[in-house]
Length: 363
Ligand code: NAD
Image (cartoon, rainbow, N blue to C red):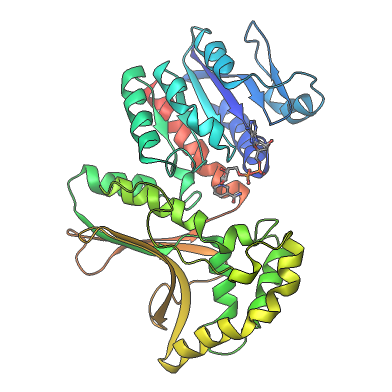
């Protein structure tokens, strides 16, 4: 009979719900292993039992919403999962720092982890080291493809490059779907058609491309987190996502306004600044884009506005796509380029599900 693997899930939001539907179809197709959901929680509710009875995947969302069980505290959850005596994979579909901080305790007990959560890998360098030490100690597996570029194969690519002995010299790209959308509309390569900066931000918010408070995209921190992860795989001991220059697009005066709505209402006062940046690029026959780059030799990581020739792949990006270029010794002057949707529930969940498949193949 097929061996059993237990699955525990935290988070059932945009990505989590898409993952659940991909897991349901994966579990139905999987012959070599019996996948059993034994725990699922959001920040408010949970479903689990002391006997680890299977939670039906076809009705899990409604079971969860009608549950009166509270989530287990993290140390309790570690004990609960480790005590099952069955191989277990934890899927963290949250953006919680607390859960990320607990990864070492799960891994040390042999519980494998797959996640789109950036926090564990872009936090302090100490947490990064603790996580990989705990993984070795517990003989657990750990994949986080969707923590950079959603479903795009970015993490697996940098790992493959490094582990096969190539030398990564530079990584450059557009790492935020929101920033991509904003600049592709604000400064199109056609030269005309871009609206006022504040209007583009308002439009992006209306279309659901930004966080509820657009400042959470415009501060550049999300991009800085992804750069931190890639720089560490490229061999740089980056201390934290705030230990290198990150340009924030939030005007100083609006950093402390109370709400996202007030921010949007006052943003037009600062349109002239962004208009100037755009005009300056235009004078050189270029367009402005919000990019992140890692120069490995000089150990420089930075995030911010840069100008690109109209023929550059970064300038020609469409919609809310991401693009990541890897310059390496083997690839020479023509970089290995990965491009496509870098956000969205289904593509992000695909990154998580394919990580789960990699874990399952090794259990
Ligand atoms: P979301 O806000 O829609 O859902 C988050 C879920 O996690 C909710 O169910 C919430 O209840 C739960 N949660 C949060 N903190 C928790 C805690 N401490 N304990 C238990 N449950 C908790 O978020 P999302 O869009 O689904 O994103 C999930 C993860 O995927 C995030 O780390 C995000 O950065 C990452 N990601 C998302 C996208 C995307 O396009 N949405 C792309 C790439 C990566």
